[in-house]
Image 1 (cartoon, helix red, strand yellow):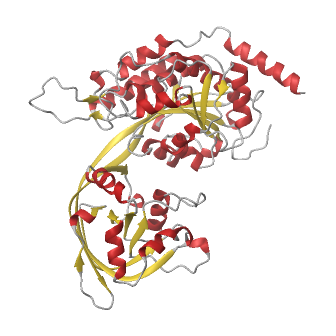
Image 2: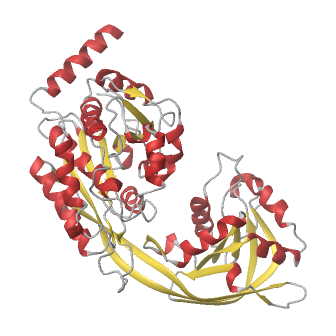
Image 3: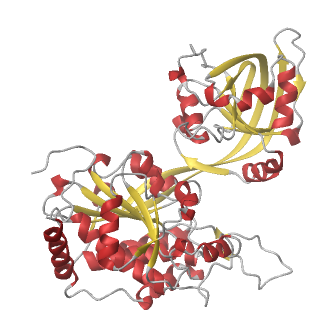
Length: 500
């Protein structure tokens, strides 16, 4: 049976490849040169650079033969974003017995509010760990309270939620505010600078507490002395703690600059003949950092644009060419293509998509994310980020063998699992992979991260390596043919619908 299956797979791949030219370096480069040109101004969400970018992607997918799959039959799905930048903030804390309020020094804390202004007196304060309300501890009420939460869960607790998810859980339970405790003193300046620059998130009150912020561990420790608590012990045992009352009250006054704006995901589709059998998804983020350096009158010729040639004009170019090769055939399953916004701001476009998808999420059989692919000339070796996270690994291995690709088994690229859009789908139980030759070359990826990454030097130049990216694009075409066909992949989507 195994021999027959391999013969069938070979026949289907051969038939699918007939008439389709391999994707070449020049095919990818022509899109990268446009998307990473100065005319696109670094593709920052909410700018004229966004308008040019999303229109270019939609026009390319339309020309390839895809149909629009965004809101109301358009190519675009709006994503409402809010940027919050701290302005003025004050926090005073007292213990329940003495009622003597002590003001926290400005360099020990940073706060922002959900709305433009926040004022509140006598807020009860609690400490939250990562065990959650199902830990069987008999959780105290959190409604209307200000919460201290360690910025990072204990390293030994792999099954615990991350900071973002735990914070959202506390907000849903009624916390009036959440202050993250930065335990690593050397990280405090970095966290503080990031917070000061402003943070963009999806719009909607359910995404934000009335007040949020960060505090240095040493300041947290001093405050807990007033309540008789051991700060170090709380942080070390936070993996098994739900909520602990601290017998502290806080007064807070916080003013925040708000900027609300609209961005867009781009969504296209190749219609399948049997969409009841599910769909597959290709995705990659189109956004970058725009005009990322302030104007200096002393340096009029200074480059100010973060063009994002590798990150991620290269991934979008792969999706455009992959779509063009797959659109000429009628697959069994629908094939969706998604270009996300605001990945650089926290995977926000992908999160918006899973909140409001064009079809039920459990219809998706698998998702493939393309990000920063132009870093290797190796046409054979590939990193499979997401390997070991779901049940489709064997199918990925089958396609790799068929295409003559060698999977990197070192696991070194797994450090990027949670830093890319595919992780949003893994969180929802949808198999998702990021497969690329670029991340199989640890030395080159590290050099990129420590060099041009998120800098003006990530632009179209001789450092672009596209041989591996072209081979990766052909591999994504092969993945599409395999998973969109019920002959090669008869499996069910996560909805568990019976095979027909």
